Amino acid sequence: LVTIFIDGREVQVPDGVTILEACKMEKIHIPTLCYMEGLSSWGGCRICVVEVEGQPNLVASCVTPVREGMKIRTVSKKVREARKTNLELLLSNHPLDCQLCDRNGSCELQELAYEFGVREIRFQGERKTYEVDQSSPSVKRDANRCILCGRCVRTCAEVQTVFAIDFANRSFDTIISPSLGLPLGQSVCVNCGQCILSCPTGALSEVSHIEMVWDAIEDPDKFVILQTAPAIRVSIGEPFGLPPGTVSTGKMVAAFRRLGFDKVFDTNFAADLTIIEEGTEFINRFKKGGKLPLITSCSPGWIKFMEHFYPDLMENVSTCKSPQQMFGAVAKTYYAQKLGIDPNNMVVVSIMPCTAKKFECQRDEMKSSGCQDVDYSLTTREAARMLKEKGIDLREMPEEDFDDPLGISTGAAAVFGATGGVMEAALRSVYEILTGKTLGKIDFYDVRGIEGIKEATVDIDGTAVNVAVAHGLGNARKLLDRVRSGEANYHFIEIMACPGGCIGGGGQPIPTNLEIRMRRIEAIYEVDRKLPLRKSHENPAVKQLYEEFLGEPNGEKAHHLLHTHYVP
Ligand code: HC1
Ligand code: SF4
Image (cartoon, helix red, strand yellow):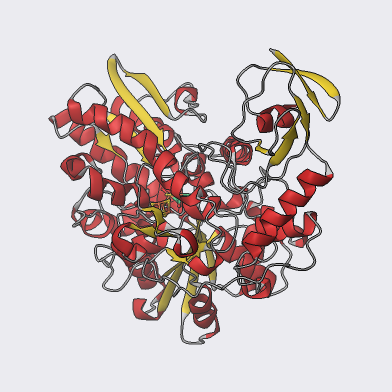
């Protein structure tokens, strides 16, 4: 510990922490902009400056370590003026059209301008005039709104290890761009959207499907059905002021029904179906000496990462489509036939915590019903925006149930939304199917939690099954390098592109940080605990689907509709 003085108060803090970290520990607020928890710091924006006695210049608190006896002033005329000037310089070439921006109301630049009392901008700079990059199916880039904090660059490099974007050019022409100035859609970007979560302004946002969904809802000839991902029910309350970790399943269903969807169904139904298909695939590979480890395939950001960086592991990846896509294929065949509807007149919309799902639903492999299986994919943020546009306040909704039959699901499907959940759901079913015995303890705590890479050995009737779970592509890379080198001896691996799994997806409400991720994860397990059925193979609607339509798991029809081979 070292003793320091913050605003005249003596405190003891661990040696080696930065001034910013010390102030956080002491609950002293220092405004920041380019700093972000979990990323390296570079002190570029100079919004977090403080005064240190004996130092002629102000120091950036995010990169300055504390020293024994240090005397720090976090607020003084000099500090306030410097922060305000730095902010005004940023604003001097910012568009200043907040009303027209996606992040109006959740923009850190806007908040700081309010907090610092900026009411006029003394410096009138040249404005940037970049074309908005709409080349990606998932992420929209508006460099005019970019303040060059570099949080997106560090997220992409340090958390995701994709390195799709970086600083380019110099001085006024500095811009954040994919390499060679290519549009994002032609870069190695995997569409995960983690850079959107770290962007303080509206420079990065999702490619919007809102207008297309409104049009479909209003078209009397279209039968529009909705599927909601496992992670939405624990985060959709946040844009309406509910605390992170609030389970809003019933209210969410009621709200989306009022938005005008003809049916409100659940991706969780298809998550149970995925477990039957993927569990069967695992059992077959395990028993017959097929390619192992089997790696889960439901996260489309991870699939694109694999295609770019680990194409040699393609045979290890499960041939199962993701639940989003299984849902679409089943809706436009089985369910359309049940209703006597032409699938061309059916519109399948998903609400996903994910931006890569927009990319996934447009992939060529995803048209096994004869048309695009999932038409539009909205992020949680877009879905909340649509509700607000129609004046629907989620908090005031009654609790309603999903429609049948594609709205029926188990606790195993619910846990898909958290890192480790797909593995846990698979183990619950694989154990019982392989042994014919009832699983005593169905909670697999070893694969839960926020640790980057988790491992467990599960005893299935005397046979040891080694499993591993990674979330965030940087962790996935570490794990996959060990698989590639032959160092690791796993049978089954779950990979999710986003830190925390889908609850931390790039389409989730902003802010999404470690604490919020943990609260959403707790809520996911609460959903699981409270459901009467908690194993995918017990889902009665899935059983009925096999009896009436699909035949055997991994059978011919299932293969045609529910499996794919990725063609990069
Ligand atoms: Fe996910 Fe999935 S869990 S990928 O994280 O397998 O997006 O929530 O919907 O498809 O079920 C996301 C979440 C989601 C799929 C399922
Ligand atoms: Fe990088 Fe993901 Fe953003 Fe693409 S979407 S630039 S991969 S962080």
